[in-house]
Image (cartoon, rainbow, N blue to C red; front, side):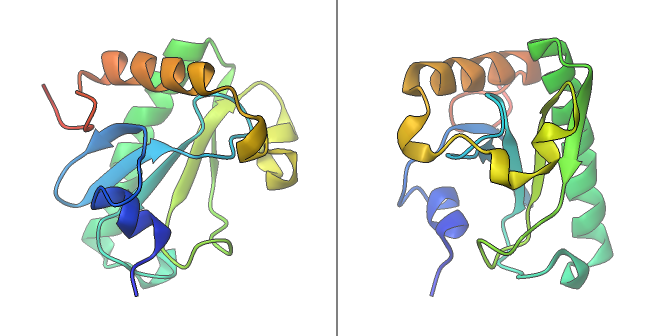
Length: 141
């Protein structure tokens, strides 16, 4: 059975992509700690990040670094937060988000999906795509 992330990657569920290649997809989470909160997800369904092969793990982190830099520049954040949790979806993923303090490091502080502003979500995705030079599908232009 496919995870919700695989369904997003395969286009079965909508997603706001900000990066995509053959190994990794990155899209905004529907429950952000702040607008611009991005999930970096390997295309392969692997539950725990510790079970990823070293090449995929390295690529996930390479993409996280690129997106983290774009987040700092785009949103004027003091830092790009980086968090691995992974209990809510059994598919390895890294959270990268604008961070000006430690509050984002607790996923108890997310904006619930039904309370996010769709226009702000779309704007955040568009700004990140522009900074990263990718189209709406997350692929390089």
